[in-house]
Length: 295
Image 1: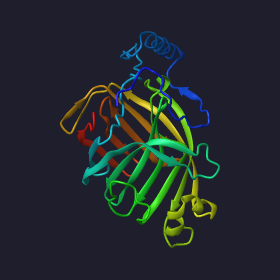
Image 2: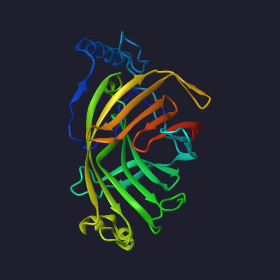
Image 3: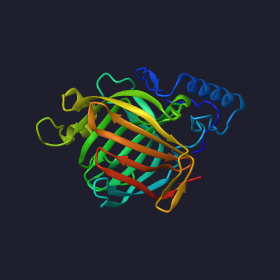
Image 4: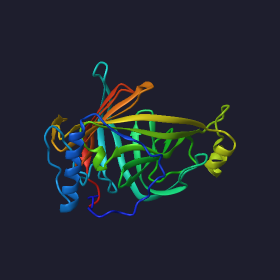
């Protein structure tokens, strides 16, 4: 879906304000400020390189999400480059689906989001992402034990139902977070309901009636997550699986307190994510095919 220069009326989660940091000098930040004013004055426009700094185009479609858009990924080990999975899949199933936040004392209760289907070895399910003027935000993950049908079916056995409050960042697209060297903090609460018969898990019949019952019964886990985000590169050229990418944006997400929570994501305008270096799982994901979906 092509971005518009007009401000859209979108869900804005009440996220805790975070201080944006810069690793480059003040003069560089001033140049990016002038660059932003030029873009606003001229409407939609390409962000050109200014001196040592590069700033990506905030109007570019960094993650197009039309219905039926599909990404097929080839996954290898970061340790020994052996094949892990040949056909990992992500597909847009529906737009404007309703998500209810069951997290305790939530910052938002209901939202409209894009529903995606994720299939990989040992983990299959749905993910809900909200596209806002600030970027793309994960709201909920529902992982099941077997390949899902076209519509979520809450009568099937599910393993994990995960909510992010106010959200988990996928990609920031505001001007100040699109320049090389930009760095900032993100905080959110991850609430996980594990469905099953074991102690601490929520019984499937209770979860089927209403996941909120699991929360009221204390059958959940809550984790406060702190992440450091950094823009690593803008417009760096890549050759991946026979495809050439030039208009790119690479960002790193890591937890300073948890060495294993560390990953770099690279996006191409008009395509979405084409490369991921996931140090959490010691995996390298490469895009091998992309279907743009419905026009």
